[in-house]
Image 1 (cartoon, rainbow, N blue to C red):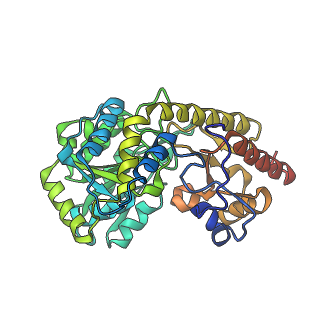
Image 2: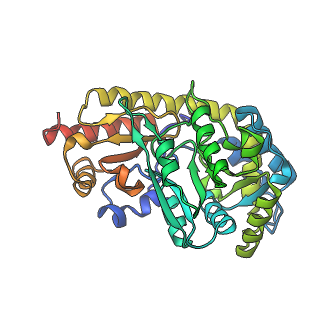
Image 3: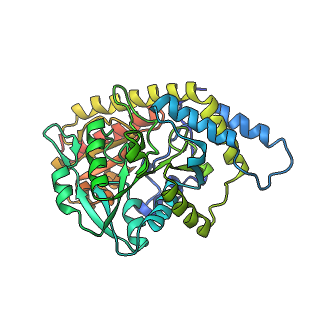
Length: 391
């Protein structure tokens, strides 16, 4: 069987399939929206889970130091960030960690900087925890590359601004922030005593020559000022194990975070998740290398396709397996654009507007699929474009 070949998930309880009718009004769409892969979780992980199931008791278990050390070694080798065991704690998800960190490190009605467009829970976690959104619009340069405006951001900051939510690498735009960009925003936060919550869940899905730089690795000051959120979910297609980690070097920030985490009782996770986590970080390197070759090939295929379909703009992502498709040349409103892809192309994508106002006119396509499935989706979109005069 092709390691990255087609897998039919329609008979499972996969979110992207079960929610089709609710989100798109029909089950007759190919769902390419949720950011998990239609690719098999590494065999080495599945084998380890099977071996653990040979033991007859699935009860409460602690996440072992050995499991944490496996992640520490992976991050050290790939990203040059030297974490310590005592800095790390379990969380069921990055989004849960964001909410916990917001409550721990700010007060109600404080301002939280969020860069627009961005992963939708960034907005909801701020609002649902009764903080105020301070929206900083990311802007595309002449080459279509998104950047933040440090001078504009400086002008937006007020005495109530206490936190910055950083998406690094960025979902949905696929940026890998450079050393200079991270240093500029990090320095601004230090200057104004703004804590950084850095979502780095996509840090291992980065295409050469780009390199992920953990915000906390830039300096001792930023190490002490940053809450880093990481995990194996995107790297190894293990979102269903509900396991991630929170890295906080500062004892002051860590104590505040752990007090809040104790209040909501995250616990220590589940035994099968612990096994999957440790196995992936210990033995998943070769699989991950092959995955990146597959994803790069798919991204390159979309680039070639976009050149033949000028109604859709596409800048290859520096990271993530998410294509940020610029559909503004089609001249449709956001509701019409979404309906076009559902009704005409029969493809269910994430509408750009769901990522914020700056996402208007875009659609997000998940290309972490078998190559033949991607070809099918691109052919459907091409047919819909030509059939409606977008050539």
